[in-house]
Figure 1 (cartoon, rainbow, N blue to C red):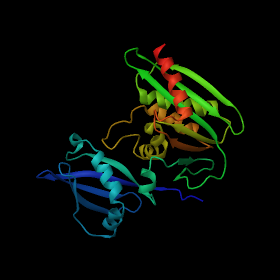
Figure 2: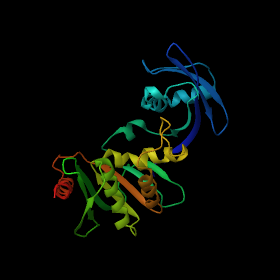
Figure 3: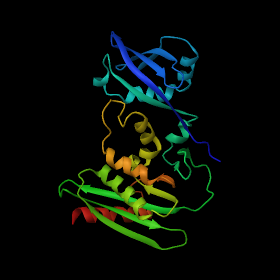
Length: 264
């Protein structure tokens, strides 16, 4: 069985700044241990200002800590800035960074489990989604192509009034779960990393940080992400990414229909 990930929550506050290096307090929410680190956004230099078992723990997860710091905009580094952030226990960074990996959100039981699929044990219902927005036309459309085990394809097409390709891609994924509300095991195949990473990397963290980003801002499209998350309850959802315009039959078909809807 695949190992699921555990999330640990930490408090983060910038307490001082000297010569472009920011002193940052990090405190564990679980045991209240804390440590000071120094970080310089210009050079991306990270130093641990104290040595302790807690600093050793953070060093074990330094890649995730650095990624969080690197993703912060320069203007959000100032004395007094605070937020909560999350580190994943037992996260295989190589596996999760592999775009070809199939990521799984399993909510068939009470606990949310997130992991990389290691082997195929069952045949899920496959759903291929794609969305398109044409700025010149000011229109969008999306497609949901369903392939149930041992059954023919079902094609669903929809126009969209949204003005963002990413949001339209998210609309398509949401619609697929609405259509398949009675199906428990689904694989969503999409060329959108926005869709793939949303429920497998971002939503669990946003939930623990009051739906705020690492920059302290409210998450964009928050209503859609919350609804998408609710639709996964009681289900096992797999996410497979395919490269766009790479002669993938179902993805190409969805792309053609989505562009036709957006251009009509």
